[in-house]
Amino acid sequence: MAKRKHDQRKRVELPRRAESKLPGRPTSRTTSGETRELEQVIHELQIHQTGRAMHNRELGEAQQTLEATRDGYAHLYDLAADTFKGRDTSPALLPRR
Image (cartoon, rainbow, N blue to C red; front, side, top):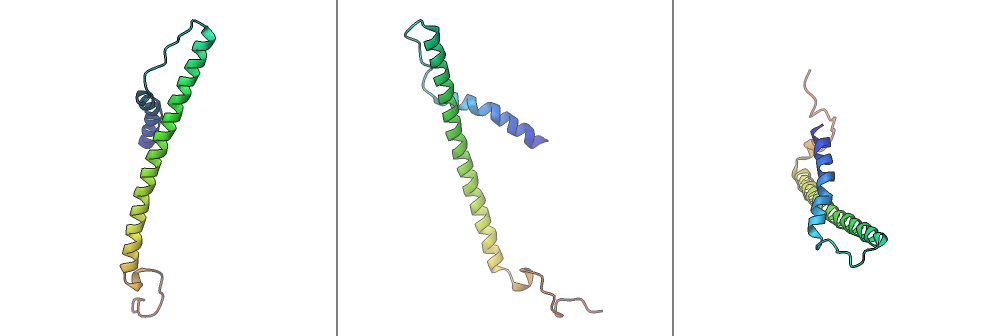
């Protein structure tokens, strides 16, 4: 539940952060309503593009963290004694009856 709220908050926050990274909002040089509308759409697309780039960067950082963690566990596994690595049912490991 808390993760879902965090994800929703991030979805709302990302466009705001992306917009803050863009240069100032373009000013209309003409008075045409259609031109202003096109400029608005272009601006929104730039926000979306910047947001996707930021999201991709965050995903890349998360992937690097996960890979480093995985490598650490693989190293620990390599150092572990063979008896800890799997299901060995040899009589030496079974309890006496």
